[in-house]
Length: 162
Image 1 (cartoon, helix red, strand yellow):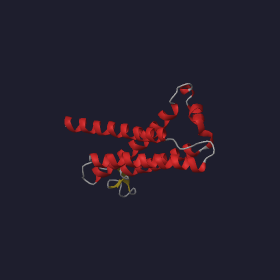
Image 2 (cartoon, one colour; image 1 turned 60 degrees about the vertical axis):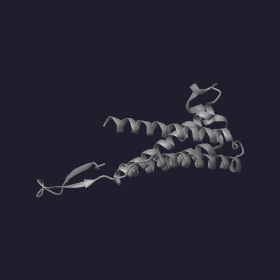
Image 3 (cartoon, one colour; image 1 turned 45 degrees about the horizontal axis):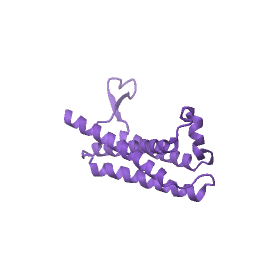
Image 4 (cartoon, one colour; image 1 turned 180 degrees about the vertical axis):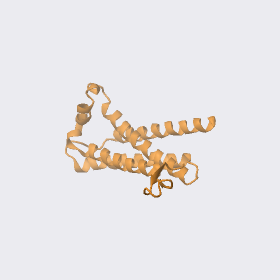
């Protein structure tokens, strides 16, 4: 994927000549967003005020009364993380002239599942109002798997059209 280019004049004497400066590859942007999102998820899951969905219900009051808000939040958070990691990997592969494979996509799901499991263990060890739940870990994994499945499916459709 070619980078974006900006033409910058050097000075008045060289106004007719320009130099081209390449911007950083997009995969680095997605990698930084992945790291930032992972830290946000960690903070949100270890934050004592988030217990019982309190933090989410304050941000999204329309979810009040829905029985599985906590599981949807877990799936959504890890779905976003999987999306960011998927794009990081796919754009990195493209920049190297390689093909993004299903095996690499499965590694994204496994990484998100392991991260979700780690967060559940940290909740049990370091918080007083939260605990580890297998269903939360399952929701984390399902959210990541659905996100990766969506992007892999869209990638396949785009490849078939071209």
